[in-house]
Every structure is written in structure tokens, then in C-alpha cells.
Image 1 (cartoon, rainbow, N blue to C red):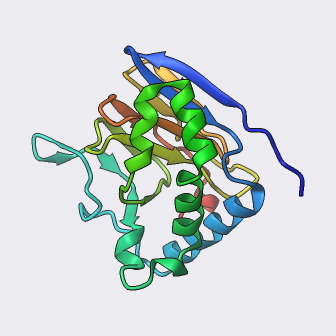
Image 2 (cartoon, rainbow, N blue to C red):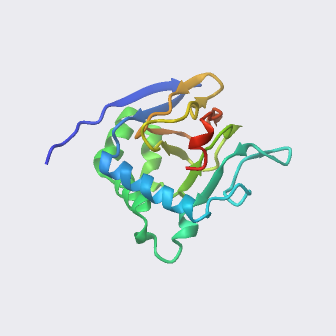
Length: 193
């Protein structure tokens, strides 16, 4: 079996560690997650309502997207989700945890990371305004149909540090950092997929 060495990128943003990896998941895992997400979307389970724990400011939602917690869908049998399985397997890998702690000790919080998995779907003009999460570590992975038929969806941290939306890219950061997702633009023929 061919082993692919992961390349970890690191930046300090507002004196806090931000790491991103372009190949944390292999192509087969990304494809499996994409198919599961497309199936969930086709069932109409993704919701625009605030049942996904969306951040608010002055009572107004800061997000314009569709989302669902995977644990809600698979409450009785989480093993049925390839997405949950792949992410949990990866995040419990001692090699990954050791490497992340080597990069920055803040990531020792991965040892106890037991957060919810939120599937977000962004369509035309969808975005998520600047907000903070309520867990220790925010972990985000992009996956989408190829060829890429949209622009935007980039990740902005603390108002000025940008990480480009790239298929398979995973970002790790302290959840207290202010972050947002830039507006998505796409042709009308690609909307809702």
C-alpha cells in the first residue's frame, strides 16, 4: 500500500495556531463523503432553519446556508455514516494527534475532541458571517463535485487571514478565533446540487 506523506501548513493568526492539510483524507474517502452529502441533500434533510446551532448576533443568524448535524441523522446507528467513520478514524489516529501537538501544544485538545459533526452546504450567494464556535477546536474539510463550478467558499480567519477553498483541504484552529466563509457564486445550472 502506497503511503502518502501529509504536508502540514502552519500559520500563527492573532497569536493562535492555524494548521491546514491538503491530503488528510484520500480521494476515496473524499468521494465517499461527497456521495453521502449528496444523498443527504437529495432527501431534503439539510435545513436553512437554525436547528444546526448557527451563530447569531442581535438575534439574527449569521449564516446563509443549509446544514444538519450528522449525529442527528444517524442517532441510532452512527456506524452507517461513512463520513462519521472516516472523520472519527482520522481524528483518533495517534500519528495525526502527535504531529498536531508537535506543531503546537494547543492541539493536545484533539485527544479529547468529541464534538458534533456539522454538514454545511453552500449554494449561490450563501455565506457565513464572522463568528466564533463554542468548542475547543474547529475542524473544517472541503469537498464538492468536480470540476469545481463555483467561486468563493473561502475561509477567512480574524478578518484578514485567508485559506482558499480546495477539495480535500482540512483546517484545524482554535474555535475562539473569529472566522467566516466567503459568499459562494455559481451558475444557475449548478445550484442545488
